[in-house]
Image (tube, rainbow, N blue to C red):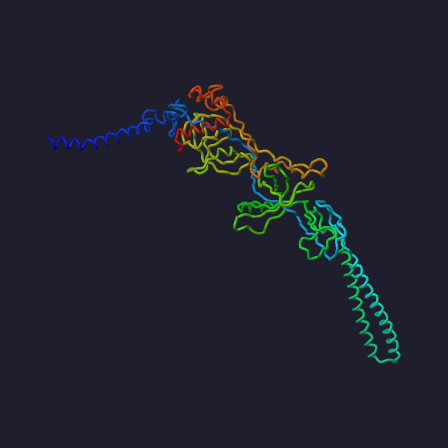
Length: 505
C-alpha cells in the first residue's frame, strides 16, 4: 500500500507537466487553425481556388469571412511606346586649346577679357618685339651682302665665258668661277631662309587665338616675362559651339544603334540636369571603336547646338536616347509588373472580383508605361498596381482606388536663353516621333487616384458612391479611411496586410 502511494506521488509531477504542455499546445493551436475549421472553405469564401480570406482582427477586429484584399488597380491601354535608353554623361568642348607664347619676352599688352568669346585668329596679347625686329634687320643685312657677292660672281663668270670663246683664258678658270656662283646662290638661299625665320619670330610677338571659342581665366599678368616652355600658357580656349556629350550605353543595344546609323537615321539625344529639367536636344555624331570590357558598354558622342552659351565643359547631364517607336502596343503601368515563380506577370482583376495571374512578355517602357505581350490581357482590363504582393490565383480582392498614370508625353523644349542672350539653346525636333520623355529616368508620374467611393463604385460592386468593403469596417475606421488621401490610404492598407500576416509574405 505504501509502495503504491509512493508511485502515485512520484508520478504526479510528470502528469502535471503533461497537462501543462497540453494546455499550452491548445492555446497555440486554436487561433492558428480556427479560421480553417470555423470559416468557410476558400472556394466558398472567395469564389476561387486559392483565395485568402481575412483573419479576424484585420481591420479593427471587424473582419470576417468573404472579405477580399484591398488593392489599387489601373486599366490596360493601347499606346505608341517609345523605346529609349537612359544614361549619364558629361559635356565636353568640341576642341580645347592652351594658348602659349611661341617666343620669349615681356608681356606688353593683354587684348582679351576673361570669359570672352573670340574667333580664330583674334589677337590676344602682345610681347615686346624689339629684339625680334633687330634679328630681322640683321638677317636682311646678311642677305643683301651675299646677294651683292652673287651678282659680282655672275658678272665675272659672264666675262670669263666671253674670253673662253676667244680662246684667251683657260677653261679651268671658267669652271672655278661657275662653282663660285653656285656656292653664292646657296648662301643667298640660306640668307633668305634666315630672313623669313626672323620675320616669323617677329609675328609670334602678337599672340593670336588658334581656334574660336570661349576664353578661360588668364594665367599671366601684364609685364610678366613669358616663355614658350611655360606649361600653363597665357589662357585656355574651349570651343563650346557646338558642344559634345560623351555617354555609354549597354552593348546589347549596339546592333540596333549601328543599323540605324548605317541607314542614315538620326538618333535623337535629350540632355537633362540633375533635377530632370531639359538642357538641350542633339543627335549622335560618333561611336567609339571598341566596347569597354570592364563595364560592357559602348561610348557614344552626341553633338548639341550651344549658341546661347548655356552649356559648359564637364557639366553633368542625364541622357535619354530614343531607339525606336512601338506603334499601338498593349501597355500597363510599370507598377503592375510583378516578378516571381511564374516569371514576369500581372495580376488581372476578373469580373467576379477574383485574381488571375497572367504571364507577360516585356517589350519596352516609356515613362510610367510598360509595353507587354500577353494572351489573356485586353484593353481596359484592370490590373493590380498596389497590393499584389499577397495575391494568388483566385484570391478575392476589393478595389480601393483606380490609378491613371500620366500618358507618355514629348519632352519639353530645352531651356531658352534669357532676354539679351543670343537665342534659344537649340531647335526642337521637327518630328513628333523624335521627341523623348523628359528624364534620364521617366517623366514624373501624375497618379490621379479617384476618391474611395468612386473607385469602389467603379470596381468593387454596384453600390454607388460607397464600396462594399467600406461597410465591413467599424464606423470609426471607415470614417478615418474615407478622409485619407489616396497615398495615405494605400499605406494604411499595406500596414493592415502586414499586421494580418505578421509581416510574412
